[in-house]
Image: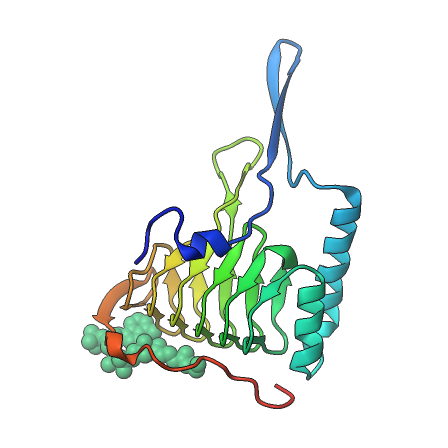
Length: 217
Ligand SMILES: CC(C)(COP(=O)(O)OP(=O)(O)OC[C@H]1O[C@@H](n2cnc3c(N)ncnc32)[C@H](O)[C@@H]1OP(=O)(O)O)[C@@H](O)C(=O)NCCC(=O)NCCS
């Protein structure tokens, strides 16, 4: 798996501005406060219209063209030949980046509030949840942790998998119904809850196109 801070995946990843912290002293006690995303009201409104419109209505329209046009209009970056099938929920559109010829299947959840980057020829099977971000459970403010997710080229995520913020290496495979809470190495096949490696993929297999856009899907 590529780990350099400036590789093509981290360069393509788009993340929200980090929570803004402020401290005030009240009755001699330091009170910490955070503001989630320090963005303008107009930007917030635009994000909200994009998100609510997509998740309530657009995601159910049986047309790749309409769904992709909406996602792109409201900030998602989606490459040629890629698609997101019906019923998938997306938060937040501006921080979702998908490369070329990748496929996100039916009824997935792409929680991109901390940024999700999906590479080229990635296949994400139905009902899979990709969760970016989290919270510090020991912080009195339940401080958000903006941990993004990166799925590198040719990864295959099996149906009903749940991925916590992590990085799946090029050609990595997550078996169906697995819960992933650690990075998956290049060509590594992992499964179970929590997912553990159980096989290695043939590197010569990574030549196919992940493009999958049947009519009305
Ligand atoms: C990852 C996968 C391809 C592996 O298939 P395979 O190479 O045929 O592997 P096997 O079934 O021979 O299993 C190999 C080992 O991994 C284990 N394993 C396989 N799938 C597993 C899973 N989902 N969770 C936990 N362990 C799993 C098996 O129990 C077996 O362990 P054992 O050797 O101790 O008995 C397959 O399990 C899978 O999840 N496919 C995804 C299907 C899917 O989502 N399709 C949607 C269409 S895009």
